[in-house]
Image (tube, rainbow, N blue to C red; front, side, top):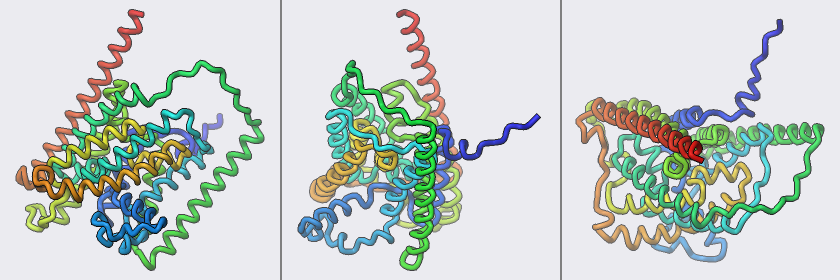
Length: 413
């Protein structure tokens, strides 16, 4: 009797991965990038990209106070965030192509346009006030024992709950009962041809990735690492359909916590790995801890910016990383979100420079490093892992309770 052969193509390229699988792979890649360069971040170059765009229209943006000469000093190949951001798009695109699932996903309602515009602007403003998105200020900060990461998480979740209610009330299009024109069904031959074309395109993009990494090596030795880590992040997130916005919004909106629990697992894995990295860098006794402590300052601007970001992410349907992933998947709505995300970064940077920083009530604060606060890596690691475990248990209980309530409602009907 012939044994069934393992279909590695289906496992790696076609079938959806679990949320937890994608989240853990994402954590491993993000920590590996931090070991070579800086921690994973998304929105760092957004305001610069906005300023560069304005410069194309003859605006002397580099002389503005919010840039102060940064535009002329900017180098794409030497900017880790820029490289990984673009690589995220191509990683998601390669994932879709290998599964022969890529297509251009058009806007179906003007409400989707408004969701992209409003969500993008709020995320752009929030990320400059915070100043970072859920990746840099939360996902990369919590595992590095920064108290600011926990504050960002709480306030972004609160914003996502508010944004989720706004989404349902104002931005989700009403159900249409009009009969749509049936789509033309492809023949088996057309399906095979489409699959061959998409897989060939994916392989071509991979080859171009190798070429780009090799070409950038002379000018920026780490650029190749960031290219492939970014591609891997985009691939893993797209194949697992992992979504930071869903992790923050879904518990209140739908009662589901599957993505939330996957995020908690990823934070636990990252925490353990960063513990080793930080012990190597700062010493087990923190004797080599620098004055610039990892993480952001704990000040009033942090909850304000993260709350605005949470609202915007829920309305837009994706956060900063999710926007890039969905662009790679062909979503026109996310392309619009990206444009207004960049646009929102400019007034956000102005507010940070002219309103937040000059106001001690908003900006006075300092970074708080948990190993220093709790007296070492051991207590900090134990407390953080126990807190993550408690969140996982609460999330699991929340989902089970929501399912029971839903079942009771169906029985009554």
